[in-house]
Image 1 (tube, one colour):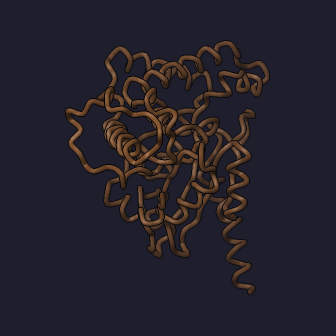
Image 2: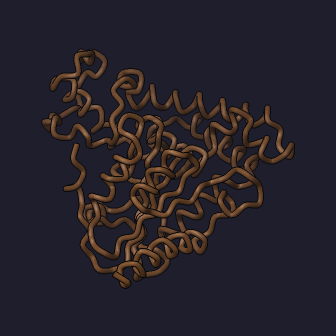
Image 3: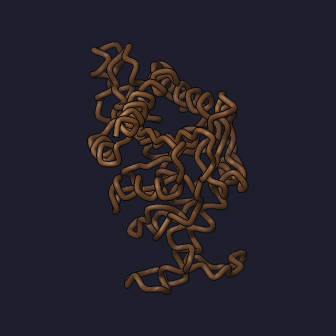
Length: 311
């Protein structure tokens, strides 16, 4: 499960690697279901409306996972990233493969790993295709309407997070294979700086990929840039990401809402920005800006550079 050979950036150009949490950072779901979002706004939002919206997303996420992403079959086999079992995939043509009757069951031996690798290959292909090529028109309409409803209820949290990623990326769209193989994704608005986005979520892998699609964020995260820390922890995922990039010009920044990513960022000596639901604050959407994120990065890395100069 070594990720160090996936890509190795040795460019001298400045590189910012943003490592994002998903839930309660780029999207809101748990806080809608528990009423925490409405509570943070001191009664300005109806908590029951938030709960209703959250339950819709829960149902749709599970529906897409089960009907299109084998989740009912593989939910007990969570992997930290899609390519984790790639060595077991023998490249077999899966066009006539019977996924419903191939005997996917314990023990977790090489045979099971190969069958899981087949499913991961199909999942990766479907993720790249996009949900508009998978779901029927009725479901797409329902999904679109509830996205707009959720964005309105949260005062533009979803669209603001997407707009931030667009600005940080310089352009929308999934990175090309060439960019991925070189360790690069998309150019930032500063042509001299490369901005790379990774997602490290504490949720299980397949639902997290589906969430990225349903919340219109899959343009910014290839499946190769998505990690689940469910089994291995965030520190391990951060270590894998760091191993994918080398060179003195690379700077990392972690953005999330939880203690685990904060602690892991501290262990890695990376800046951490904690997202907060409180209204009118800078650490939320809308609110977070590239200037603010850049300030956090500069403070940590300029201080580190100054210490090196003094030594």
